[in-house]
Length: 234
Image 1 (cartoon, rainbow, N blue to C red):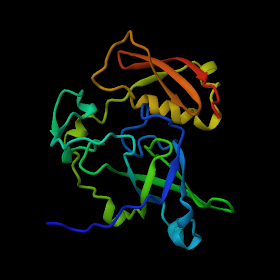
Image 2 (cartoon, helix red, strand yellow):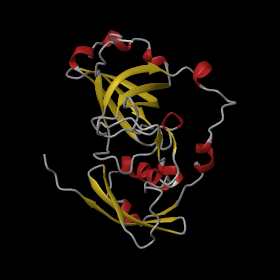
Image 3 (cartoon, rainbow, N blue to C red):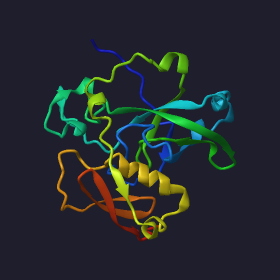
């Protein structure tokens, strides 16, 4: 069937402390201390477009996996949480490698700031998005409809408890701005490594909030080895 589908419009972008994908929590809401800003494109910087949104505690963000290369459709993927060695149906996962690269995240709406130059800016927490991710839509989260207390999480429930104990010297943590320290500890506790990598001798690293974070993992304990400020390329 040859259908004429409407074109998707990018309505804005989110600003976060993640310049790359490494380290981003695998689902929204896992680290509530992560903060971000949804900044609308000029066409949508209208105060009336967010009228009434302030009454909701949470919102849905629909967004594009903009960093995922296009490729042929594969009916199965290898979820990282299963070690990368087990194939599951793509529609049973939240893998970015899907027929349409659309993501869905439930985030807390902390506030709506009305600005002179950027219009209404949505301040959110618990986001699992890379800095600059294109936003396709914003919808209110409806507790009576969106929260199913009898829901079952399939294979994802079996791996949810794989958190780590984080050890970070105070002098290292003190190198970060105070507003992102708790968020970093939450990110690390969720184990940002690919789950097929479990080498206690290996040092991992990723950029976060303008700093390079380095760490090792052994026996379910993550030890931060260094935190260094990245050069300002701006």
